[in-house]
Image (cartoon, rainbow, N blue to C red; front, side, top):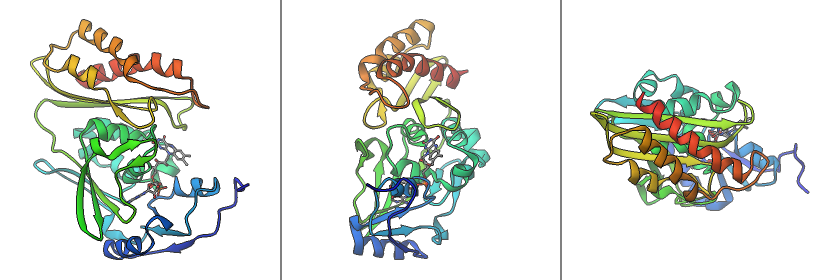
Length: 288
Ligand SMILES: Cc1cc2nc3c(=O)[nH]c(=O)nc-3n(C[C@H](O)[C@H](O)[C@H](O)COP(=O)(O)OP(=O)(O)OC[C@H]3O[C@@H](n4cnc5c(N)ncnc54)[C@H](O)[C@@H]3O)c2cc1C
């Protein structure tokens, strides 16, 4: 039985560039775990999920950035911490859903170590930034032995902790589209305590013109084996004037799109019931 305190032995590799990190991934493939902030890798290690090699990105300083331009949008390097992202004023101004998902994530300690890219790569169905970035239509940029590859976040989450990442690929950055006129977003979650992982989370991103919803993406976490979009609810809202009756119809449509489970954080029944309220509130917050 693995101990809950002692890390299994592994060899720590410390590349100093993306090229070096990719070389190591090419050599060790699934025998190596990439580590950014390590807030998940180290916890998983104490639970027995360890590989013989850990490739730490700590010295790959070229990945430590958050960049924003009005025309190009947001680019988050693989070493940018949750706190770096929450502290970037353009994130707060243009991507409120992402801002909140980073700013409330874990504790000050984990926000100063954990990364936004790590939050997505971890592919936990309850990941907070993962949910916000799914609503915001983000893209993930990978670098591997065959060169660069860009994956839409819609295609990234495949099943429970199963993603489109190949064993020899490093996620180098996440891109979020440039903010367009009329685009609003919001994120909300429900937890047992403020420091806990989400029981349920929801994020929305809408384009509203004269009160009419022109485009919409609704994402939810911890209600299925992976972070999901609520396509049926999106179809109800798109093209409609946002009114109390349409919001009621959306709330009623939500339960049937979820496949929640009972676990230590909540019950399937609670998750299903509260989701209808959470999504409605998140839409209302976004358009307020
Ligand atoms: C006390 C505590 C509280 C937490 N609270 C929250 C919370 O409120 N909300 C939440 O969503 N999560 C929470 N977490 C989970 C975790 O801290 C976050 O998801 C964090 O963002 C993970 O980032 P990291 O850089 O530490 O990832 P790491 O631990 O370094 O990596 C996580 C996973 O992603 C992979 N990975 C990381 N970077 C790359 C890369 N560049 N390329 C390829 N693969 C990569 C790793 O191999 C690993 O599988 C919490 C964790 C702890 C310990």
